[in-house]
Structures are given as C-alpha cells and as structure tokens.
Figure 1 (cartoon, rainbow, N blue to C red):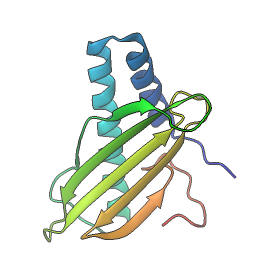
Figure 2 (tube, rainbow, N blue to C red; figure 1 turned 60 degrees about the vertical axis):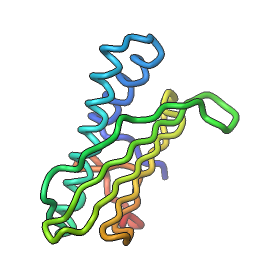
Figure 3 (cartoon, rainbow, N blue to C red; figure 1 turned 90 degrees about the horizontal axis):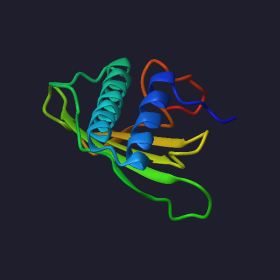
Length: 135
C-alpha cells in the first residue's frame, strides 16, 4: 500500500516545482525555504517522538533538483539537514523525492543519530500515517 504525502508537504513540493519550472527565482527561494523548514520540522517531530532531544532545529541545505535518471516523467529533489542532540551526537537527515513533479511523488527520508540509523520512512512529521514497518 502506497502512503500519501502529508498535505503541507504536497503544497511545498508543488510550489517548489512550480517555481523551478517557471524560472521565478524569488518564488523558488521561498519554496525551497518552505521545503527545508517542512523537512526540518518533520524530522524534529519524529526524533522527539523517539525520545531524542535536539539542541536546535535541524539546519537544511537548499534542495538539489535534477532530472530523474530513470525513464519516465519526473525530477529528483535531494535535501540534507544536520543537527546535534543535547548530548552532542551528530544528527543527519537525508531526503530524496523521486518523480517530484508527478501526481504521486516518492519520498524517502533517513535520519541518523551518532551514525546509527534511527528512522527510514516515506514522510515525516505528524501528518504521516504510521504503518507497521516504519522505524
């Protein structure tokens, strides 16, 4: 069963892609910022739910957009966020959205704490539906 994007994430991805396609740099910067914030907030929520306390919110790099390498419509967005736990361990959030301009994009997010994978799922935050297999 395929999971759906949370409503805020759908809006952010749609705005980011519309800005990228239109070439409007101001809108693209706003959309990139919104996407980074959505990923950072979602990752922080997920970590908090697992008892991991962060010093500060994750800081995310602007998403990298490139044409998808596999056949078919779409592009790929990549984002990386970093933070530290209250104990000083490094936290990394790596996100990939494939077929980002398709009606059903495929997201994958991996979160590591101190080099250990603590989370791998296809959406982040409270808008996600939990399924058996989520870590």
